[in-house]
Structures are given as C-alpha cells and as structure tokens.
Image 1: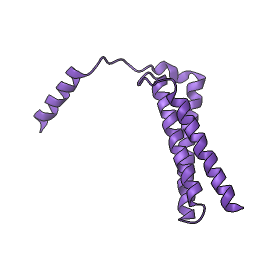
Image 2 (image 1 turned 135 degrees about the vertical axis):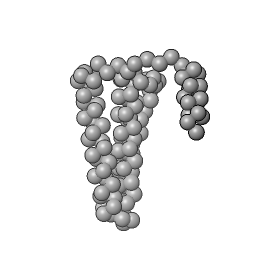
Image 3 (image 1 turned 90 degrees about the vertical axis):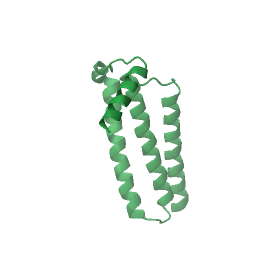
Image 4 (image 1 turned 180 degrees about the horizontal axis):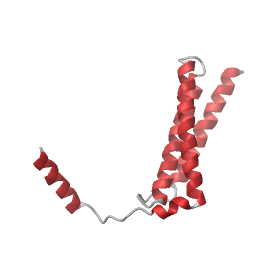
Length: 120
C-alpha cells in the first residue's frame, strides 16, 4: 500500500503542470478583506437559514427558506472563487464571479417573492 502511494505521488509530481506559489500579499488589500468578511457573513447566514428551515419543517415557508439556503451556498462559492482567484490559486474567466452573483441575487429575489406570495 505504501509503495502504491509513493508511486502515485511520484507520477503526480512528474505529470503536473508548472506550480507557482499563491499570492498571499493580496490578503492585506481592502477589497480582499471585505470579501473575506462577506464570506464569513455568508457562512453565518447559511447556518442561520438552516436553523430557520429546521423550525419551518415542511410548512408553507419551506420553499422560500430553501431558496435562501441555496442563495447563501452560491454566495459562499462565489466569494471562495473570488478569493482563490485573488490569491492566484485558480484562474477563472472574468464572467464567472459576476454570473454567480447574479444567480445568488436571483435566488434571493425569488425566495422573497415566494415568501410574499405565501404571506398574502
């Protein structure tokens, strides 16, 4: 088992493309700090939405809270993608992060619309 692991690790090192260090100096830039704060807030909102969804348990407001949960998941993924791109760990096309933000806003808006429709 150990020999297989060593062989696989060796093959991965030989076959991998060029590797560069992450740009960690970008952490101190204000936009990056704000994105980290938004990521932390999105994770907190995700946990809060899960707690409310557990309290609702299949009532009429279950669908809007599911939409809010999916919206927070998309927001977390968006912020993680932006930070990974800012740290130069991954390279994404320029339209990916704004597209994910539009999806997140659409999910939140649809959740609010559904909640308003149910409460009227």
